[in-house]
Image (cartoon, rainbow, N blue to C red; front, side, top):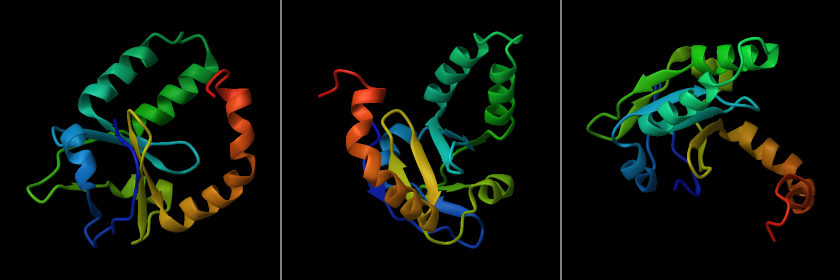
Length: 143
């Protein structure tokens, strides 16, 4: 399970070092793709394959399903961490997420997210107000 918040930096070649706590889960290969709210989702290869299998079951006749598949899968890039545990984030994904040098990498259970630090801080500040009310509406019976 991927948990926590980390603050790595993006180097001049578009690479980021995977947080040490994520390396066991992600060290065998990853897929990076467009996330929602202009972040990037990072899946282990196995988790991405499972996600792809669920996506494939969506009906092609459903426009929302087609739109989601197109955006999610067309942006995906398979990457392998190098000997220094760095992954390269392709230019089109860096542009999509507005990534600058300062990043935030968060663990969200089965996947990680990569955010531009400024975007993450704005998202966190905006969401903090409603956070306490979310579990009642989104995850009934959680607490």
